[in-house]
Length: 274
Image 1 (tube, rainbow, N blue to C red):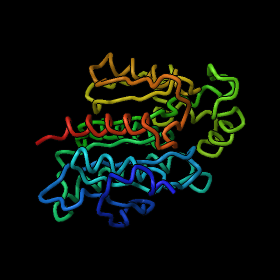
Image 2: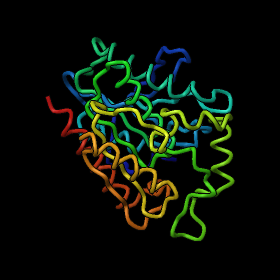
Image 3: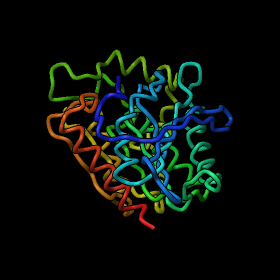
């Protein structure tokens, strides 16, 4: 049970339904005994775009809430194949926009908004940041993209790892990609594949990013490509490559996971100080 991991980080928890084209269930984590208006972080979990696993990120959300002093909104978003592209990134952006518009009365500060996600959730966070750039807001102080899939134009069978048997296998990539974006032509969309060579949109002004890749992950190269692209427009805060780690390495509540979670919280705290 993820809720039992990293038990020294404790939060006050509240459930909420966020209205959007597809209403989204979410859990709000607040630091215990928090007083005053808090920064707010919106988190999107992993699961290959097909699994609803909101509780999977419970430890991460608790660490961020405690160390960054933030309200953390952990979103149980729409999943494929029931809701394929473009529904999930549209919903993700609508959730972020709602969080920014409804700060008053909810105890968080829309001017100190950050977003992030793991794996598929990182892709959705990147898509939300892209839509915020296109729409002229809301203002996002930081996006944290943790081992995200950012180029679905390349089949998983062509993505390489130093490991003989990495966690993400070609058949898994085919299942995820086909469920999320059934039409291969749509996989060139910048909201799906911002690291693809086909995406030439000007990203000047996009939310600053921390990108975390895992050294043995087949998704490492596309994370690094996107980091270089953001660096060219001055939007890369940090690229962290976790050596010897595979995809979803943080499912183990070990010291490496604790260290990376604390670094994520530190970056969020740095970017949301009043």
